[in-house]
Amino acid sequence: MAEAIIEVEGLHKHFGGVKAVSGVDLTVNRGEVVAIIGPSGSGKSTVLRCCNYLEEPTAGTVVLNGHNLSDPDGDINLTRAEAGMVFQGFNLYPHLTVLGNITLALRKVRNLDESTARSRALAQLERVGIPEKIDEFPKNLSGGQQQRVAIARALAMEPAVMLFDEPTSALDPELIGEVLAVMRRLAEEGMTMLVVTHEMGFAANVADRVIFMDEGRIVEQGTPAQVLKNPQHERTQRFLRMVLDHAED
Image 1: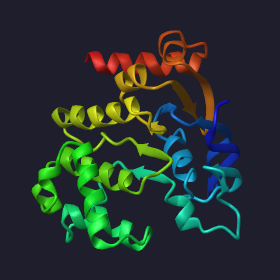
Image 2 (image 1 turned 90 degrees about the vertical axis):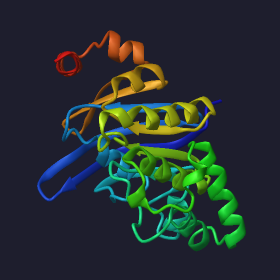
Image 3 (image 1 turned 180 degrees about the horizontal axis):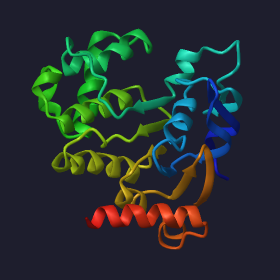
Image 4 (image 1 turned 180 degrees about the vertical axis):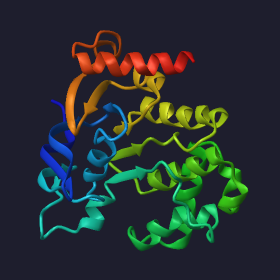
């Protein structure tokens, strides 16, 4: 029996008069990797940000690892910690070392002592392949290394699910592969992941399910083979043709 880690029902999000998301239903089960693709402005990132209440829905419900995020009696910070978030930008504190960036939330939210927090930080840096950078400042790291630190920071909180918001879009082309390799390893380890991405190769080869969004709605979803190789909806077909043509240029 599949265990739902994220359950989204009837999600709407408006920014003033702009309807960014209109009636999205979405479930992500434990151990599943779900990729959300679609054109810019389709609502992909907004859905992701609503999944841990970085954006509060206009309407609808979001249940994260069994906790209703709209529950007024719930602890939103503790519940939000169930979802590790990795952004387009790296969002590292420039005045803190890699160790400081990773351990800050461990000490403030998880209430870990300094020694335990350091051990957990080092373990996650080893997991993403850069343990030797633990005492470096972000300015001394490449973009790919900074994003791997951001992933390690999220993993250190031991979340139930990892949320990735186009994690390679700010990287130079030669650095994209190292971040995708980390994400691929996480998927192989069984990490539950919801990934907004424009990397079609990752969606095709790593995701269990692909969702195509346009104009704030889910247009089509299915296995990577179904959505990427044999899309049924004309809008999906048109989007994939444009992506393929761009990749060939």
